[in-house]
Image 1 (cartoon, rainbow, N blue to C red):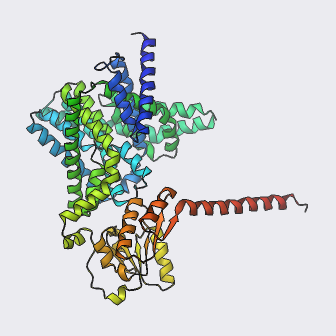
Image 2 (tube, one colour):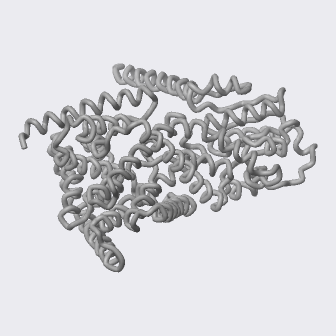
Image 3 (spheres, one colour):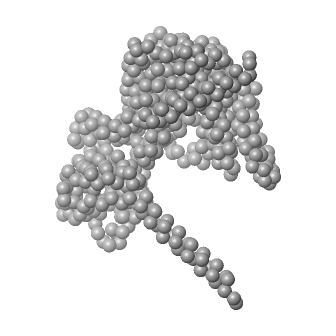
Length: 560
């Protein structure tokens, strides 16, 4: 084909995708939505502006490989070990149960076992890119539901590679014992490839990096970073495995090295362009839906959100998470993720999935992504509303984990209720203890409570629940101090406290200035704005450092 025509089509794809991405972000959506819509609009099944889909797909595969490479760089073995058993169990159970349920339901709908497994795998994946961006913007990543969501998302990212191997084998038409043998061989190849990567990355690459750095040529480290990411993808393809596997494995092996951050920074611009092409290529596989098809997609999306949210919430309840937090986590992760597109794309291009089913899947997935900002925004209130109606008063106390203690009213009177026992809560408790002011701590982390119960008056309890605040003695308390970083939960605690004790002083931490007015309107007496506090400390220490430096220069300039 004419290379210049192909280049013109790539430029057109990137340009239109950028415009649609900007529009999506202006509508408070993720740019990925814009890329998908751009692909649908320009693809051969809609307006037919782009015809050379094969060449675009080659670049799209590079985009996915680079995406997995940079995600792999976020995983070091030390970080993986720091997950903890509960976090790992949450992710493993969520993926396993979602695949099982999705496979069973689609099998009943008449799909083959291989196709049903693909549908189950797509159901299991949530959108790391969309969810984390929104949680960070809302300052909810440190909330209990945010931490749960992060743990599950990271385990999903780890599961992408084995799922890709299994889907690729099934897409080749292998089944039964042959499929099991083929999958085992693929995993054996993957193990050998990872071993080879380990030897090269641990023993050869550091010397090349040092040589490039000592040459003082900024281009050489960039070239080396691109060569590593694309070279590992090629190596995996050369032995009959998905290029994504090679990229992801190389990223994980590089993550523990000192220069991993620099490599990630060097690859990011290239990845951005190729990932954009990937999402537009996914859109090019589908056609612009009619009104009826869109309504069907919306109905399917609603079913997916309810099913996936229920699966995640049920798993977390079985793992003894409080019901409101379990429901909130389920709503946060109820969308279909970007790696679901990767799995479905492999299946549809190898005729494992029919085209019309893929069209409906893509439409429903886009609807779930469009709904994600609103699902996250209202997840907390909806979760507590459901919990209030599902649980009786006594069971609700048990669900939030507060152990009933018969504490006399005189013991509760005049004490300060401290909500949260992180660094900020510890500082407050230490100050109160030093001044011999009685206090009582409510904390949601069972490990923290069990380790601190020996020398601290601390119990497990969800302070967003009025029963918990009543049991803690808020009516007779001297003050309430809310030290948790999540603004949504803090606002709920403040409003509940103000309703139960109209005259009590309520002091609350605001992680960002934008939430201060909201907390004040909820009833906070004092809002400690972290950004102002940090700014004042930085300003004071900057002046001290500058003045000290000036004095040192003056003293050095004085004649001996």
